[in-house]
Image (cartoon, rainbow, N blue to C red; front, side, top):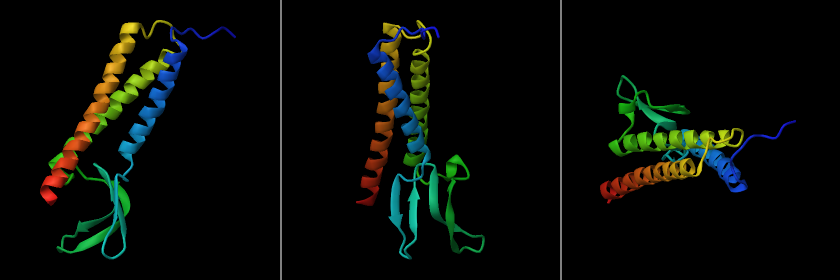
Length: 151
Protein backbone atom coordinates (compact mmCIF):
# COMPACT_ATOMS: atom_id res chain seq x y z
CA UNK A 1 0.00 0.00 0.00
CA UNK A 2 1.57 3.34 -1.02
CA UNK A 3 1.91 6.06 1.61
CA UNK A 4 -0.72 8.78 1.67
CA UNK A 5 0.48 11.95 -0.04
CA UNK A 6 0.21 14.78 2.46
CA UNK A 7 2.08 17.99 3.06
CA UNK A 8 0.77 18.32 6.63
CA UNK A 9 2.92 17.92 9.69
CA UNK A 10 1.59 15.98 12.67
CA UNK A 11 0.36 19.32 14.07
CA UNK A 12 -1.55 19.92 10.83
CA UNK A 13 -3.16 16.47 10.98
CA UNK A 14 -4.22 17.07 14.59
CA UNK A 15 -5.59 20.50 13.58
CA UNK A 16 -7.55 18.93 10.71
CA UNK A 17 -9.05 16.24 12.96
CA UNK A 18 -9.93 18.68 15.75
CA UNK A 19 -11.40 21.09 13.19
CA UNK A 20 -13.64 18.34 11.84
CA UNK A 21 -14.78 17.23 15.30
CA UNK A 22 -15.43 20.84 16.33
CA UNK A 23 -17.33 21.64 13.11
CA UNK A 24 -19.55 18.55 13.43
CA UNK A 25 -20.35 19.34 17.07
CA UNK A 26 -21.00 22.97 16.12
CA UNK A 27 -23.40 22.03 13.32
CA UNK A 28 -25.19 19.50 15.53
CA UNK A 29 -25.52 22.07 18.31
CA UNK A 30 -26.94 24.59 15.86
CA UNK A 31 -29.52 22.09 14.62
CA UNK A 32 -30.62 20.74 18.01
CA UNK A 33 -33.49 22.62 19.74
CA UNK A 34 -32.04 22.44 23.25
CA UNK A 35 -30.39 25.87 23.65
CA UNK A 36 -32.91 26.89 26.29
CA UNK A 37 -35.01 24.56 28.40
CA UNK A 38 -37.87 25.33 30.70
CA UNK A 39 -41.17 24.17 32.11
CA UNK A 40 -44.61 25.66 31.54
CA UNK A 41 -47.02 26.25 34.43
CA UNK A 42 -48.78 22.93 33.67
CA UNK A 43 -45.48 21.02 34.00
CA UNK A 44 -44.84 20.57 30.27
CA UNK A 45 -41.14 20.60 29.42
CA UNK A 46 -40.29 22.96 26.57
CA UNK A 47 -37.06 23.75 24.75
CA UNK A 48 -36.04 25.86 21.81
CA UNK A 49 -33.15 27.18 19.77
CA UNK A 50 -32.94 29.89 17.16
CA UNK A 51 -35.00 28.08 14.52
CA UNK A 52 -36.29 24.87 16.16
CA UNK A 53 -38.52 24.26 19.17
CA UNK A 54 -40.06 21.39 21.12
CA UNK A 55 -43.44 21.27 22.89
CA UNK A 56 -44.65 24.72 21.95
CA UNK A 57 -48.02 26.51 22.14
CA UNK A 58 -49.86 27.33 18.92
CA UNK A 59 -52.82 29.64 18.40
CA UNK A 60 -55.76 27.88 16.72
CA UNK A 61 -58.14 29.54 14.26
CA UNK A 62 -60.67 29.82 17.09
CA UNK A 63 -58.17 31.92 19.07
CA UNK A 64 -57.36 29.22 21.64
CA UNK A 65 -53.91 27.99 22.60
CA UNK A 66 -53.08 24.34 22.01
CA UNK A 67 -49.85 22.56 22.93
CA UNK A 68 -47.95 20.84 20.15
CA UNK A 69 -45.99 17.95 21.68
CA UNK A 70 -43.29 17.52 19.05
CA UNK A 71 -40.15 19.20 17.79
CA UNK A 72 -40.18 21.27 14.65
CA UNK A 73 -38.92 24.31 12.79
CA UNK A 74 -40.67 27.60 12.42
CA UNK A 75 -42.84 27.71 9.29
CA UNK A 76 -40.88 30.59 7.77
CA UNK A 77 -37.90 32.73 8.66
CA UNK A 78 -40.22 35.60 9.64
CA UNK A 79 -41.99 33.32 12.17
CA UNK A 80 -38.85 33.32 14.32
CA UNK A 81 -40.07 35.38 17.30
CA UNK A 82 -37.53 38.22 17.44
CA UNK A 83 -35.04 40.03 15.26
CA UNK A 84 -32.17 39.01 17.51
CA UNK A 85 -33.08 35.32 17.11
CA UNK A 86 -33.27 35.83 13.33
CA UNK A 87 -29.80 37.41 13.37
CA UNK A 88 -28.58 34.56 15.56
CA UNK A 89 -29.97 31.98 13.15
CA UNK A 90 -28.18 33.55 10.20
CA UNK A 91 -24.84 34.20 11.90
CA UNK A 92 -24.59 30.89 13.74
CA UNK A 93 -25.71 29.02 10.62
CA UNK A 94 -23.08 30.79 8.51
CA UNK A 95 -20.46 30.14 11.18
CA UNK A 96 -21.33 26.43 11.21
CA UNK A 97 -21.19 26.26 7.41
CA UNK A 98 -17.83 28.03 7.25
CA UNK A 99 -16.45 25.78 10.00
CA UNK A 100 -17.51 22.69 8.06
CA UNK A 101 -15.97 24.07 4.85
CA UNK A 102 -12.64 24.74 6.57
CA UNK A 103 -12.69 21.35 8.30
CA UNK A 104 -13.30 19.42 5.08
CA UNK A 105 -10.60 21.44 3.31
CA UNK A 106 -8.17 20.64 6.11
CA UNK A 107 -9.22 16.99 6.07
CA UNK A 108 -8.59 16.74 2.33
CA UNK A 109 -5.07 18.00 2.99
CA UNK A 110 -4.44 14.83 5.01
CA UNK A 111 -4.82 12.78 1.83
CA UNK A 112 -3.57 15.11 -0.92
CA UNK A 113 -0.24 16.85 -1.27
CA UNK A 114 0.02 20.63 -1.46
CA UNK A 115 -3.61 21.39 -0.58
CA UNK A 116 -2.53 23.41 2.42
CA UNK A 117 0.57 25.56 2.38
CA UNK A 118 1.76 27.82 5.17
CA UNK A 119 -0.23 30.72 3.72
CA UNK A 120 -3.36 28.62 3.19
CA UNK A 121 -3.15 27.32 6.77
CA UNK A 122 -2.97 30.88 8.09
CA UNK A 123 -5.93 31.94 5.94
CA UNK A 124 -8.01 28.94 7.06
CA UNK A 125 -7.11 29.64 10.69
CA UNK A 126 -8.23 33.24 10.24
CA UNK A 127 -11.49 32.05 8.66
CA UNK A 128 -12.07 29.76 11.65
CA UNK A 129 -11.43 32.68 13.99
CA UNK A 130 -13.91 34.87 12.11
CA UNK A 131 -16.52 32.08 12.08
CA UNK A 132 -16.14 31.67 15.84
CA UNK A 133 -16.32 35.41 16.52
CA UNK A 134 -19.54 35.81 14.49
CA UNK A 135 -21.20 33.15 16.62
CA UNK A 136 -20.05 34.83 19.82
CA UNK A 137 -21.28 38.17 18.51
CA UNK A 138 -24.72 36.71 17.72
CA UNK A 139 -25.01 35.16 21.18
CA UNK A 140 -23.92 38.42 22.77
CA UNK A 141 -26.55 40.37 20.79
CA UNK A 142 -29.24 37.90 21.88
CA UNK A 143 -28.16 38.06 25.53
CA UNK A 144 -28.02 41.85 25.56
CA UNK A 145 -31.44 42.21 23.96
CA UNK A 146 -32.86 39.69 26.47
CA UNK A 147 -31.35 41.60 29.40
CA UNK A 148 -32.45 45.01 28.09
CA UNK A 149 -36.06 44.01 27.38
CA UNK A 150 -36.66 41.90 30.51
CA UNK A 151 -35.36 44.33 33.14
